[in-house]
Image (cartoon, rainbow, N blue to C red; front, top):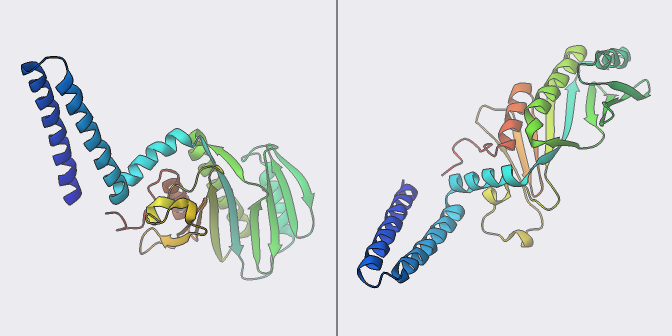
Length: 259
C-alpha cells in the first residue's frame, strides 16, 4: 500500500511540474526555458523513483526483469534428468521396451548409438542424446548435453519432455519418480532470480549463491536457484513442468514471498 501511494504521488507531481512548466513558459519568456527546466526535474524524479522501486519493490523488480528477459534471452539451456525408483531390480527387457518406444517416432527420429545390458544411448533428430541406465532398484534417464531451447519453442519442448517422462514411466512402472530440469542462461547473463534473493551484495563480489525453496506449502516440487542456473525437481510430473513454465516467465515465487 505504501509503495502504491508513492507511485501515485510520483505521477501526480510529474504532471503538476509539466503543467507548471508549460504555464510559466507561456507567461514569462515563451522561449521554452521553463519547459526544459521542468522536464529535466521531472526526468530526475522519474529515474530516482524507478530506481527506488526496482531496489525496494519485489513485484516491480520482477516486472522489469520479465521485460528484459523477453528482450535479451532468445533462448535458454535445459538439462532434463529423470529418476525412477523401483521396488526390485530392473529387468533387462526394459532396455528393449524403451528402445521400441522411441522407435515409434513420437519424439522425433531415433537412432541407437550404443546399447549394453544396463544402458541405452539414443540420438533424437541428431540433435541430442538420451541415456537410459539401469541401476540398483532404479532407472535413470539423462541427456548427454544441454538442450538449446529457443524462447518461442518453450511450450513445445515442455510438452515433449513431459510426454517422454510419462511414456518411460508407463513402461517402467516405478514405485516413485523424481523429475528434474536444470535451466541455465548465457554465460554473460546471470540467473534472473539472482537479484530477487540477493539485493545487498554487489554481484561482482558474490562468489557463491544457492537457495532452495518450494512454491507452495503443499508442493513437493523444489526450486534451487544459483548464480547462473535454476534446478527444478519434484515427484509430480505436472507440478514439475508447471514450475518450469513459471521459471521461464519469472513468476516462480514462493507463496507469500512478494511484497
